[in-house]
Image (cartoon, rainbow, N blue to C red):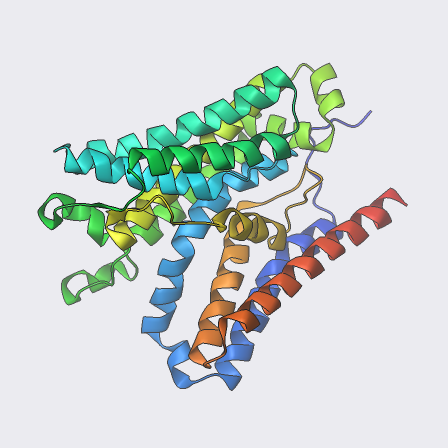
Length: 329
């Protein structure tokens, strides 16, 4: 009997992992050829990296959730709540480090509630997170009194530099600190998924929850931890969002969860569970950013970008379903 924790490196698996990277290279090459020269400049590449950071960080958490066979529709609301909490704490005189930690902690608590509701009430994740999408958004609006929370610029300190363009003194960093944060978190999640028991259990639950339970996996505990960690990543994405806007905005990130889920799916994650990769999710986020940047540089309207991105998502899901049918056959 084959272990549910065994990782197979078949040619099909290799192609599945390299597919998003090849797609990114083709899309970038396409815009580099037909777009303006400014598209391939170092400055625009830095802009693409900065724009990818928010979705990319949230996608790391969503990778865990989807690999486990779940879904989280409350990501956008969690990001908004995080920005509001950070701004509120800064406004009350808290140190930027404590304010940032408070925003991430508030987000993590939202994920903890999601996990407990899903495991204790045994309600499907789609319904639970659809409900918390509204609850968390409402909490953010209530905390902010349905308006943006402005913060004294003197209290921001390093927070406003996370995703800001680099000045001449810091060009040696190549990209802003927020992008390096994405890279560090991506490496950490990849190592956890590949080399830890928690990572193997996450994939095992997504592949076959009943088998995982029979093998002694603490399914409920893993689910709660995954949703809490994923929401904490959304909180870090909220920190990046706050750095970009420097205000607490309860109306920000509406629909962000769709971009995050799309990044994971485009990157090879399966909505059926049991599959997903950190590299694929980051590449998926980059693909969407490159498309938006390319269309914008060419002067194409926003609706064209949405059609192209939506088409890529549909193709990615269709290929995933086709691949599963061939494996089943």
